[in-house]
Image (cartoon, rainbow, N blue to C red; front, side):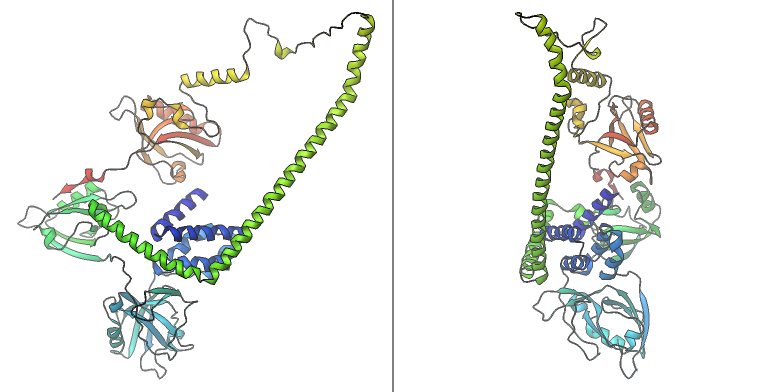
Amino acid sequence: MEKKVAREFRHKVDILIDSDAEKDYLYDVLRMYHQSMDLPVLVGDLKLVINEPSRLPMFEAIRPLIPLKHQVEYDSLTPKRSRKLKEVRLDRTHPEGLGLSVRGGLEFSCGLFISQLVNGGQADNVGLQLGDEIVRINGYSIESCTHGEVINLIRTKKTVSLKVRHVGMIPVKSSSEESLKWQFVDQFVSDAGDGKISLAGLASLGNKEIREKKVFISLVGVKGMGCSISSGPTQKPGIFISNIKPGSVSAEVGLEVGDQIVEVDGVDFTNVEHKEAVRILKSSRSLTLVVLTGAGKELFQTEEERMNEYYRHERERQELMQQKRLAMETNKIVKEQLEKERQRKLEITQKTAEEQDRFQKEIEQIEVQEQKFKKEWDEDWGERERGREQPRSLMSTGADVIPHPPPESKKDTTTDDHTQLPADELTEQAVALLKDQGFQKYVEDFDPYSMFTSEQIVGKDVRLLRIKKEGSLDLAVEGGISTPLGKIVVSAIYDGGAADKHGGIVKGDQIMAVNGKILVDATLPEAQTTLAKSWNSGGDWIDLVIAVSPPKDYEDEVTFF
């Protein structure tokens, strides 16, 4: 479970944060928190990296890493971004005004945010908050409105209806030359204190825009849509347009390579199979499509486009690193963290020295006990040995005393003609015998590649998995040595089963061994019997050696219309 949480957290970090420097800083502050358990300091450090609305989901991703006893306090210190819209009504003719200030507008490619509230004013009384983003005014979307148009829209009616969602951050820009910055509402200091609507300049976000659009296609009198579709990879599922023929119907309605089809004639395409998508698109001569423009453009880029995109990202990353470097050098919080890191290293050094001292004392105590034991043994048994040798010396005066060898124990004698082998040689022979029979014993630091010949593992990524026996394995296999596949592969993994909870095995992986039983040349019934017996036998774990399936070639599922 802990590994799954850590894997999901790292995946979230890779999606939301591009800068390696910021990633390292994030991991460092989390490590320092688990040393000091100082939650307010942790949240303050996180806000240096989670510094724009798109990164706010990081707070939720970090929550499972916080101990349960601190999670309530963590929730109170971190902003909660709401996806639900809240609608309020304000009286424009009120003598004290609306009681709020806003920042933003279309001319800055940014939404409109509430930056100030008058205590006890209309906006405050109806529950509006600093950091709320205004989405609709009087039923109209303001996504395409400038700041001045928003002001005029508010003035059109006596009763102003606002729909907002809480973000918890406010964009800040003092001049048109200054780059865009975001501040959390508890850090924001407004310079507009008169309670009126204020105009504030904001910079462009500079990110690509993915928007939803609806298109209508009539295929009457034409051969087809003139486009091809492909299903996306595992990390980006969906149906995407992979090619557009020039002059076709698809080109005329504005479809482009990389657009994701999310709906066709009311049918949801987000989780549809490729064959089913083809069938639906061919089922009618009049289609209504809902697409996300450019959602999968990176899947179909040429090498030159990928390189240009890479260089653009690298330039942006370098600029961000430079800005962060300058900001962090003068930031008091970072200096405090450096001091805490120094203290932490000092504590580690002291603990290491204490451990070495404790180890040395334990060694000395063991030596003292050994000496004491040796002395007691000499006192108890040394006298008997000397007493046993004294009569012999009297009886054999003038002759050399030749002591009899001690009697051999039963362990050193055999009653048959077989010669006893050393323990290490016996172990090696037993392991070799088991391997000849198709079994391999797992030991610590076991290398699964050692179980197979070079021909059996050439070009394969072989891994050893330990799956805890909880409930049912819920894993189906197919193939076998006598089938065209020629191997045992995973055909299905069912939700909630032990294999699904483990997360290390997916559909298409080859099962090469189970609990030491090699299945490279096994038939399907033999593999199924081995899996069942291994799962139902004793022990809390089942060991699987798998060969990871190669990445899927998505060009195999391209269909032209």
